[in-house]
Length: 177
Image (cartoon, rainbow, N blue to C red; front, side, top):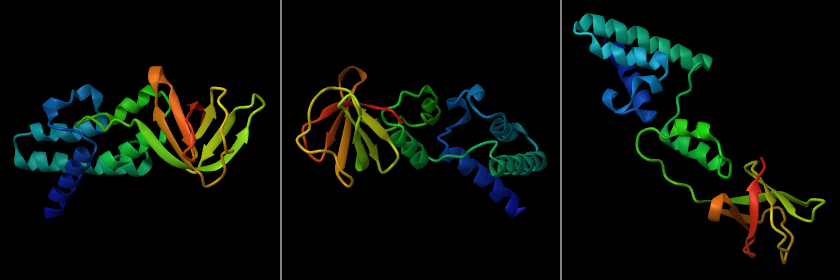
């Protein structure tokens, strides 16, 4: 029986890691059905029935996670996704905004992997993390971007971004990949 309680506790820890607070704090409609069935086990008054429910539902959650039907993400992983998506407007990222208010990301720093000048005379810069940023203004850089150069990108006015390459004057940019 100790293992059963441990599995139920592990499932609860998974739920806590996802940022789910008390049942009243999150509307049931925002939860995955399989997770909601686990939470509903708490409503059972009989200890044996509640334990059997937790065992069955914890096993179902474990199996669904192993098959990829659900994904368990902790706060640190959610923050990493937000950083990787910096510069994109993706409404689906609100899925990671449960629980405490997430840290607002206003800038990221990376390292240039490659850079090329497009036919329009503007730079396209790929960072080592795979993000690709394209210059949108016509400002000229004193030094060409090169692999290993530091890139700092920050939010600017009206949804735009400023990209600073190797400590030079910042240019306007947008995320393309």
